Length: 230
Image 1: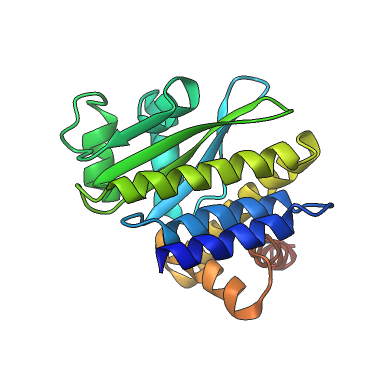
Image 2: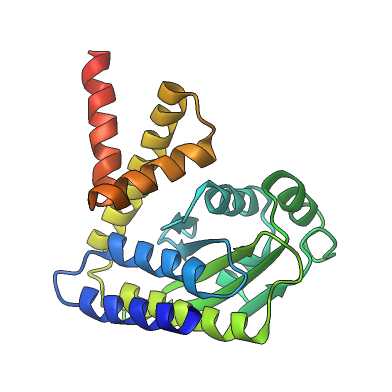
């Protein structure tokens, strides 16, 4: 299952590199593919550094991935930051007890249910974008040699996709999509009285069932809410 899924994602990535490339959709395909293909991985996202030095999140697979990244940025500690800014690979087998991140680790384990974490640094040329692929396990002790090997392939895919993009224009679109999806999650939470995790999953299932891009589903929900507010 893991290998066949990896090959499928690689085929789709190669097809997605034909110009004009939809960077947002390509990055989503990479993170979702990582969750489906890499053993032990339950959540994933991509972090990139901007021109202003701030780190931003792209293509999170769910709200756990969103909140985990935001928590690391807020606390200025965590495997994600270490990978993006310093170390090529950061592996955490038991997040709750690892002394390298005394605040983030226990908090992420208790509040988000993250047991282990793996982060890979990548550099996208020629735009010189520095970033990381963040992989999260629901249980401690789930990271194996195969997990690392396959995870590194997805980090390479992210580097290729970002390196192939028109950078500023494509990144702005990807970040705008991320913001739009966040707005839609908030609307679904309020409208259907769901928590944010289920609201995100609702949007993802709607996208898959209708074969409509997630950002377009989100845009439709936001537009509908705006029209009703007038």
